[in-house]
Image (cartoon, rainbow, N blue to C red; front, side):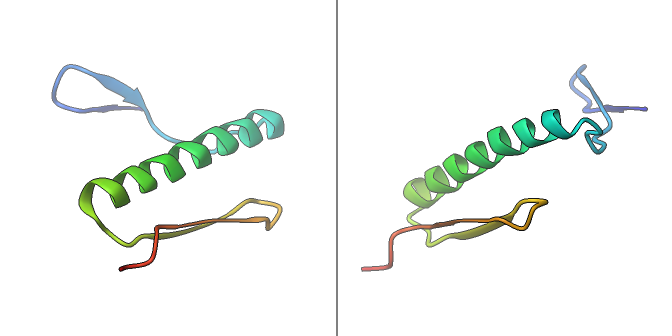
Length: 69
């Protein structure tokens, strides 16, 4: 199934990645990207943001913007 975005682009429906290695690599890359975007939002909008991510193995990753001054 494909999802249309109205601007002429199409994207596959998001589904679970079955291959364990590929899933772990994707998780790692997307986690890094999400933390980067969180930091950018914090800086650009002067917002206090906390982010907690748990992997499938239960490992926790966190980000917290600088405390309010």
